[in-house]
Image 1 (cartoon, helix red, strand yellow):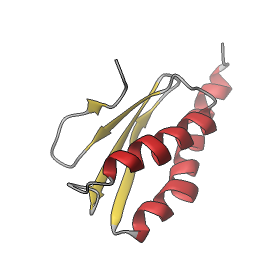
Image 2 (cartoon, rainbow, N blue to C red; image 1 turned 180 degrees about the vertical axis):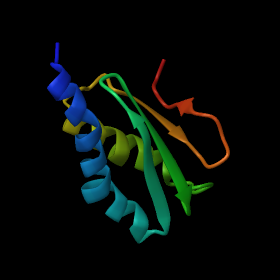
Image 3 (cartoon, rainbow, N blue to C red; image 1 turned 90 degrees about the horizontal axis):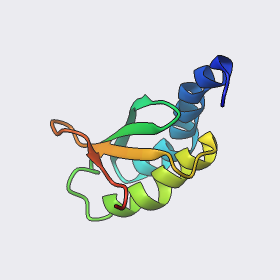
Image 4 (cartoon, one colour; image 1 turned 180 degrees about the horizontal axis):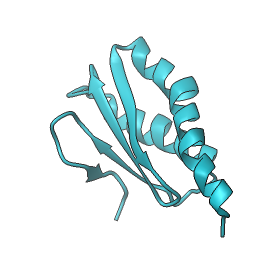
Length: 95
């Protein structure tokens, strides 16, 4: 079980991955991303601007955002949920 010090680094590491890896890729196409919340078991991410209604948003979520966060945080079971501006969180995990 991670110590409290390791727990404290989870938000910083998640934010670093979003800022340095994911955000530049999303902004190229006019989208925006914000990390809303993160802990050892879950993350909530908001996609906005050009991501809203984009047919490629599914692929961005499944093949860029989720793998990047899971790798950075060392958890293949990390639950990653996505919200669009004005909508409630929806899980994108497979049942």
